[in-house]
Image 1 (tube, rainbow, N blue to C red):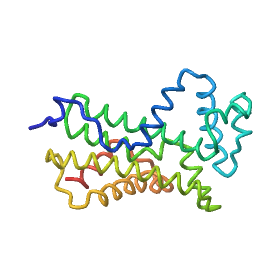
Image 2: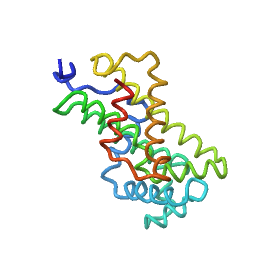
Image 3: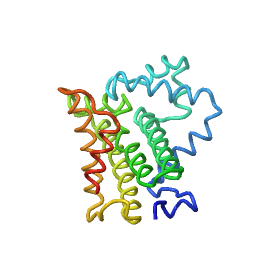
Image 4: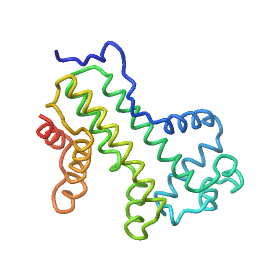
Length: 216
């Protein structure tokens, strides 16, 4: 059987953590407020440039072209702003994975593309690189907590996809899903960030092929 059982009914991946849902609800409730959206976009830009340590509420407000007091209408602390930005991005990652896995086409291809969407998350967000640099240089607690949060959500997401794929016999049985998920995430990092330091970048097809070899 080539098609997944969930084709008859679109799945909602269970790794949608409660706080992600709450952040999505808050974003939706404020989506019509131009000030809130300015804060989110401005903060994403400022955190990406200066990390947590170098970011101030004043800097976010100035970049957004709004008063500092306006930010405190929506957020109490700088860390709360950072968490909101990350949760918005992680929620979008989940949505993309759901769309892929519930789309038409070959089941294995959909599964690999959904997993790829999750394991490549860190590579497409400059803010994550900046937080990692800051953690290594200064050991900033907020950066550590943010990166742990990202890793936890991505790891859980990939684990859920692996469980679905194994249940449908698209991949070999997996005894330790959490460990396999972690290995996949670090494998992607090795094939991109580390490999590209001294070699030509791998294509998406080459990365997909390595994932296929590992899981089958």
